[in-house]
Length: 209
Image (tube, rainbow, N blue to C red):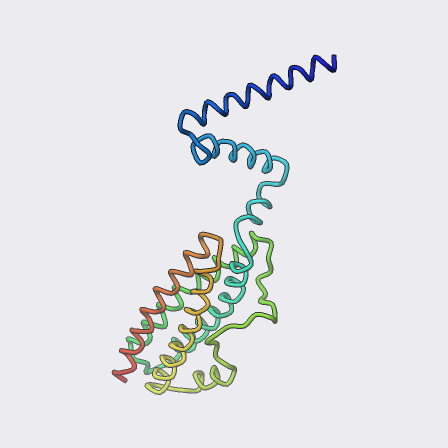
C-alpha cells in the first residue's frame, strides 16, 4: 500500500508540474495570472489558521503609523484647545473666529479617527515619552493666549497656530513617506494640504491686523 500511495503521489506531482508548464507556456509567466491565484490561496490558508481581525490589524500598519497617530492626537488636541480659547473671547475679528471654528471642526473628528485606529491595532493612545512633537505650545504659551484680548489675542493666536501647523506638517510628511496603512497615509496627505492652505490664510490675516 505504501508503494502504491507513493506512486500516486509522484504521479500527482508530475501532473501538477505539467499543468504549471502549460500555464507558463500559454503566456502566464512568473508574474502572470497563475501566480496571484497561488498567492491568494496561500494567504487564505494562513488567515484561516490565525484570527482574521488580529492578522489584518497586524499586517495593516507599521511603527510609523502608530507613531503618527500617537503624536498627532495630542498635537491636534492642543490645536482644538487653542481654538476653544479664541472662541470664548470677545472682540475677536470674525475672520479669526471663523478660522478657529474651522480648525476645531476639522481636527476634532481626526482625533476620533486616529484613536479608533490605535484601538483596532491594539496600540495605546498614550504617547510614549520617547516620542516628541514639533510645534507644540508650552504651558506659558497657552497662558499668554488665554490672557490676551482683542486684536492682540488674534495676532498671538495666528502666530502660535502657524508654528503649530508647521510642526504638524513635518510630522505628517514623515508619515507620508514612512507609513504603511493606506488610511493613515491619506490622512497625513490631507493634513499637509489643509494646514499649508491655512498657514497661507493666517499670514494674510496677520497682515490685516
